[in-house]
Image (tube, rainbow, N blue to C red; front, side, top):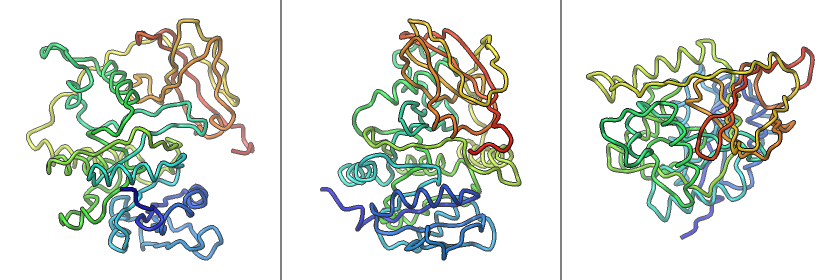
Length: 357
């Protein structure tokens, strides 16, 4: 049974310092859905402006956090489904309808798409990280010796490959909160809030998936549903992202592992990087003939990375992709068909002062 998103879906967007992105996102989805609710946690939206016409803007007296903001919107929603969106997400063709169809056909209260990093859909983002990763190791590295402890980098590659090989909706232990289709009717029937408000920011999506699995319900990733997530774009809060993530991690581990978490696999990534220095324009990388993929991450261990297929002899970022990259450090590597790493580079993107971004 196919249902109409225009009748059954309300979009929920939590704005924090992303006013322009929020307005742009609204313009891309307003004709696809029933209604839009924006929770303005940074109080920088003028509800009377044309960009937010026919949008319900709720401005709390203070920043109440991501999970609490979504719950606030969910309480005021009449439609069966909520489409939770980060301001820096853009749905691709038919994404929402595919999510809605999967939720109906599989009786799945939580569905999500796969993400690309760029508008050209060349850089595949990895599955949501989750914690601790060892819980996923048997699933992603089949037929391994039970006494083996896979390297964390090897596990990350195996998860990425398996995740992007799927062709139909599949169960996935953790979905990213950047884009989630939530059956709000199901949550109301089970007297469950969408998010646990103990998590101010970060881990609320991991916890959501954990609460569902404790009820015997698996989150569903819809392979054909595609979205772009301009990853690493959100504004830095006063508390810093690192401190907020650390605080949420402690809450998560105490909730799920009260006797202490099991150890994560080791990370043995050791690489010699060619340092390209500070760059104000996109680098062009010379690629060997046996290289099949390029990975890009923001840490040198590549535990989290985006992946693109390569066409030697060279690779460069498209101009839209380069402009979307935040200033900061990046790490790249090429790999061959067997997954063997070939070459490594690092650079720091630095936008010239006064340049348009």
